Amino acid sequence: MCCLLLQGLLPPKARLLLADGQWRQVPSENVAPGDLLVLFPGDRIPVDGIVVSGCSSVDESALTGEPMPVSKLEEASVTAGTVNCDGKLTVSRSSLTGPADPELCICSVQLPQKELQVLWYGKRLVLVVLIRLLTTLAQLYYLVGWLKM
Image (cartoon, rainbow, N blue to C red):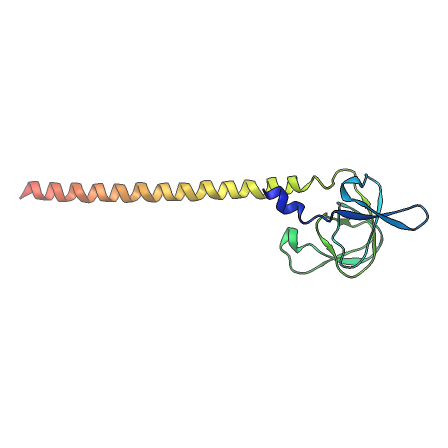
């Protein structure tokens, strides 16, 4: 389920830069390591990569929660699913990451959620045990006090 949500951050198409300087749209999953992509202002970045030319600010709030765009110059890394804000970028797809990598993000999101869920159940269990203990102690105190009369 999370995978589908994160996949919604990835555009279905990417602008592949051709040898003659032109570009054509291709499916994002067909972008190979080392391929050059052209990103215009407002484009969602389809794959992880390295900026080869251009400069821009990139809105990474969908992944990091940080509201301010981050400046990206040549040799800076960009992350799939973020948004190019105000400049034209040429990006080379990195070899280690790609469209399937939101699954890596899922693990980093799901693990803390599971830990919080276990922590919540643990706190609830401790509360139930304490209430039961206090109730039992109150009953014993009442019983012992009644027997002494």
